[in-house]
Image 1 (tube, rainbow over the protein chains, first blue to last red):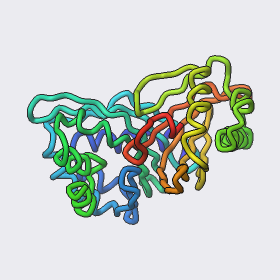
Image 2 (cartoon, one colour):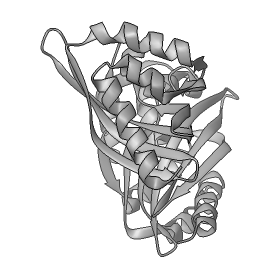
Image 3 (cartoon, one colour):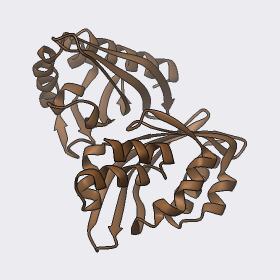
Image 4 (cartoon, rainbow over the protein chains, first blue to last red):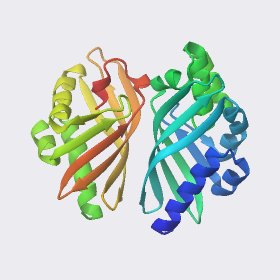
Length: 153
Length: 128
């Protein structure tokens, strides 16, 4: 894939994520796509990630993916961005996140997400166990296992 | 800079940090280096970054930067890695982090570091 194609795919991915277009994300993820988070140090399948999104989206009134800085390399992209969230309470917060995406044949085959979990409570406007559970929801959708881990912590 | 030069610079930098060779780190930093980390959202200067490295060295018995996956782009490099720490009490800890670096003329001009402070507490600067 060329630099332009990778950049376009990256922006398509983030636009779809922002617009809650799970159907579009399903087209962007390769069938064997893997999603990994530094907070949990665990991989999940793209299918599990997509399945978790509706519940994840329900946690906030709005999420926007702003200040996107994209660099491409052979086989993928790295994007640094600010995730702005508006909670149902009206509380607003921002997180700084970096995602590395590996791409092939117009699709994303792997996503590595890096964020700081200690910022999440302020972002979500919640505290303690609720923050940890909500973190699992926000980290690119999270998974049932990750949510359980957050609730146990 | 070419791919090979960027990869070499990346490994030189992490090797120098790992071996606490701050003279070498200083050589690899451009005079106007900016160091940003997602833990604070604030930029620090070259001098401040070196000072943080100096102060952070005594916090652990050993710190290694392993599992390096390096990719390069037009103006810099991306490195994903594991920081493995052995504390003075012998306890081991590991965190996954990534750095996006801008480079020019063989030096690093900007570092953006992303990590999870939940894996190391306190102090925050020890992960740098």
